[in-house]
Structures are given as structure tokens and as C-alpha cells.
Image 1 (cartoon, one colour):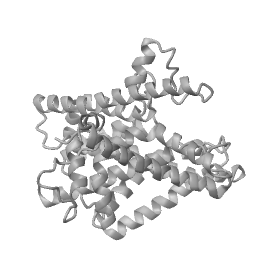
Image 2 (cartoon, rainbow, N blue to C red):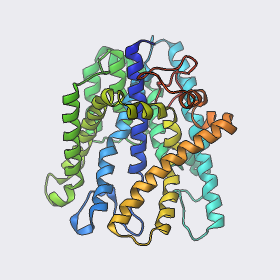
Image 3 (cartoon, rainbow, N blue to C red):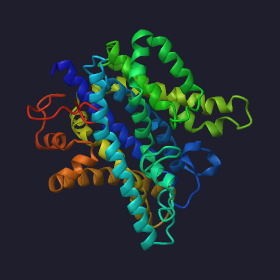
Length: 400
């Protein structure tokens, strides 16, 4: 592998694990004992610092799905010749590395929901489906998502990614011949949040196409900004996120521009976040901490799959242990829940890979070899793969 490719691969591993950890923060949800929805933004009259922090991290990591989608699009067209054979190979790979694990994880969610309902009948549902009164269409939706989100709701992303992969020949044809026109049309669809019927949201389609265009037209993305520019972009992004979190306090719901700022403005902020986070990755990956985080990129899919409802169980456990629900202890719950969820996911991944490798290989989309290599040796330089390691460049699909 060329040194430039190794560096970019390490950057991608760093980004994919980091933003999936961000999704754990984003999916924390309301604090125990409150009805405050962090996705609505922060109002001073609702509470203190803990509520602002919760909302802030939601909007900061709103760029996670766009960034993951862009990476997927970029890596999908690696070594592409746009032939029928190329697309058939990619389709077969995605069936094993995305579709089948997604079905299995959703089946596990249904099974766990049934166990909880039987053992703790007063606890309420942990998923959106009544597992004891499923129609055939309910079962299909719960497993793969068609007209509503799957049992593990975070898999809406994989549902949309699979559909985007399915139409990738059309996307590639348009992007190769008229990239700016194609991306411009998709950008408009995304900005106005136009319903696309078969997609849950237009985010994956647009950002996958951006990543695909970067690969197809060889855009220089390994180092898209200087260190100083990357820091300025990140600081600016952090400030804009704070303003967005505070939007309900700053802007009245009755103001004519309120809907534009909270809707279209939030989507533009996601695009800015993708640029800011990607621009910082080349510099972070050159640090010791960055290298270690990059090595965890191989379990990004597994963490994405297992983090919910695991984090909700952890959150409830911490809430039962903490003496009060003061502002400070709510923050303790918030950060402890995310940290423990990530550590448990890593521990479960390593346990399964050690004792039931075939199961981990299936649930992780075929990454058992990559995980073995990642934890068995330390890289001697930034982004260097081990000789016997399977390349770990793909985001949520098995490397080619």
C-alpha cells in the first residue's frame, strides 16, 4: 500500500470510530426523570448546564451520519472500472457485510424486547414494536425497515446506505459526466429535506455521492487544509454548534426565520462539520492517541450496532446508583454512560472474537481478522498496516 494510501486509511479509521462514539452521545436521549428533548435545542428556563451539554453534543455529532456516508461513498468506488462485474462484486460484499448483520442485530433486538417484556412487564417497550402482536409487515419492517425504521432504530442509516449502493451505477454515471450538476441537484434535495419515499432521509444519498465524486474525480482529500486552517474550522464549528444549541433561547418560534435557521441552517451546519472534522483528521492521526483510536476503527460497525439500547440500560443503571439528579450528577451519568457503553462494546467484541469468532465475524460484517491484527500488534508508524492484516479501509462494509 502506498504511504499516502496508508495515511488516508488511518485517517478514515480514526474518523469512523470517533464519530460512532459521537453517535453514542447523540443517542443518549433525555436525562432520567426529565422530558427535555436535546434535539429541540436548549432553553434557559428548562434547566442548567447538563441540558445544554446534552443538546450541544447532539448538534456537534449531527455531522456523524453525513461523514460516515461520505467515507462509504469514497471507499465504495475504490479501484472501480464501472463494469457489471465490479457492481456485482460490491453487491455481494454488501449483502454479507451490511444486510445480513443488520437482519441479525434487529432479530436480537426483537428477542431481547420479548425477554424484557416477559420478565419486567411494567418496564415498557424498549423498541417501537409490540413483539407479541407483530403482523407480517411489522416483522419485515422490524428486521430491515421498509415503511418504518427497524427494531434497532439506528439501522435506518444502513437501510438508506443499502438503497444508495443499489443505485450506485446511476449515481456513478451522473457523477462521472456532470459532477457539479449531479451534486447540485442532490444538494438541493438534501437542503430542503425533500421526501424520497424509499429513503428515510436524503442525508446518506447526498453525502455518499459527495464521497463518490471525490474518489471518481481524484479530489485531494488526504490533506484538505493546513493545520492552522483545520483548527480555525473546528473552533468555528464548535461556536456555530453552540449557537444552534441555543437557538430556541435566541430566536423566538414566532420569528419568520426560525424554521429556516433550525431546519436548513442545521443541515448546512452538518456539511460544515464534515469539512471541519475531515480537515483535522490528518493531524490527529499523527499523535499517539490518534493512532490508538485509529486502531479501533475495525469495530466501528459493531459499536454502531450494539450501542443502543445498551446505552439506555447503562444510563438506567447509573441513575439507580447516583444519590440525586442534580445538574452535576446528570453530567456524571451522561459521560459515564457513554464511556462505559463504548468500553463494554469493545469488551464484547473482543470476547466474541476470541471465543465465538464466527459469530463476531457475522455480527461485525466480516472483521474478525482485522480485529485480531488491530489488537495483537502495535503499529510502528502512523497508518501502517501489519503484513498479515486484512486492510481495514471500509467504513461499514468488509474491506475489499
